[in-house]
Amino acid sequence: MDFNDTADEAEFRAEASAFLSQHLEPKGKKPLRQRVSGEEFMKQAKQWQATKAKAGYAKITWPKEMGGRGGTAMQQVIWGQEEGKFDAPTGPFTIGLGMCIPTVIAFGSDEHKKRYVQKALLGEEIWCQLFSEPAAGSDVAGLKTRAVKDGDEWVINGQKVWTSGAHYSDYGILLVRTDPKAAKHKGLTMFIVDMKQAGVEARPIHQASGGREFNEVYFTDVRIPDSDRLGEVGQGWKVAIVTLMNERLAVGGSPGPDWSEIMDYAKQAGTMSDAAFRENLADWYVAAQGYKLTKLRTQTALSKGQTPGPENSIGKIITANQLQDICNSAIEMQDHYGLMTGDDMPADGLFQQSFMWAPGLRIAGGTDEILKNIIAERVLGLPQDVRVDKDIPFDELKQG
Image 1 (cartoon, helix red, strand yellow):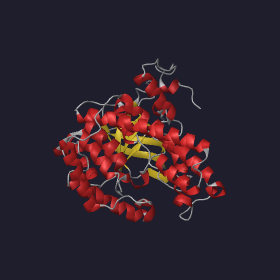
Image 2 (cartoon, helix red, strand yellow; image 1 turned 45 degrees about the vertical axis):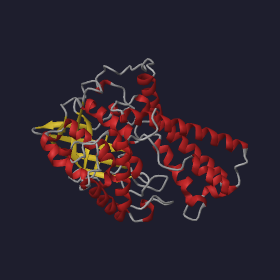
Image 3 (cartoon, rainbow, N blue to C red; image 1 turned 90 degrees about the vertical axis):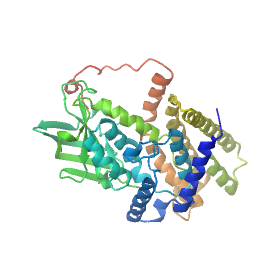
Image 4 (cartoon, helix red, strand yellow; image 1 turned 90 degrees about the horizontal axis):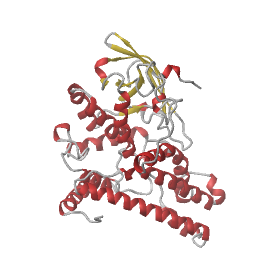
């Protein structure tokens, strides 16, 4: 494993850092999203997206004809590391550029690419991903939203849930069931959907953390032209797998306080002498260093032009669970103050806010259980779970 940048990588890192310093403020205690109104945050997010896109930093690995830089995967990693040091308003575009648009590029027509890619890259249009349903979360292939062919169009009826950013998105990629007589993985099809058209209703969900990032989305007789289909009819699962692979890479880490921040707080609170806390702190440190080295192994592979191994699958399991543990310990440390939140609370209420968000992170991008199955089957080579519904037509499966 090589811990150092090559000469070319060091040059690019300095170039990226200089560009970021010119346009953004260093990351402070309170992120931009919490300092400004939602409308102002979105305005600044779009401005920043356009700025870095025009400079060739929005999607570094994309070819130049797609609006990218034609750079290396390692340059993209370096950009992410450097941008993470600044208060960059990137959130609204993570799903679109990290998951949806790569799917459009992989399965869309030339007309799709010409129409959608550049506008998304410049921050002019925002995308969401419409997969999960009330009865199909981890088991996405169990979805019930239906699409029925009517001439050159498909008529969509059904409901999605936990759709991040649906309330401000312009477009989305939508996975629906087009053949209920086929086995559940084989009767699905993917479409591009205009989120502003008649029959599409997004209802924000008020979360325990106080945020409203997730949505229920209802489709009532929504018409989508067959020309906006991604991939072949009945091959939606194949298309969805490409999207899900990008999703799990995008959510591999976790935002929020880590071992160093709770250690700093413990020093202020005078609890560093507590033996049980020190033992937990050591465990968090070891896990964090192990994950850091795993990421460095990936970076080393990228730096050498190699394809990283499946070790990235462990990232979200480690970081999401550790975030929840750290925040829980900090709240207990605050005693009765731990029941409250707000700017006048210890550590500005950071641990309470993150504690409310942490359980959602353990679900987003694949639950802990799903990711453990992936690691067991694809990394460790263990036998697959028994699936009694594998070849049964979807409309014959027991429901409820």
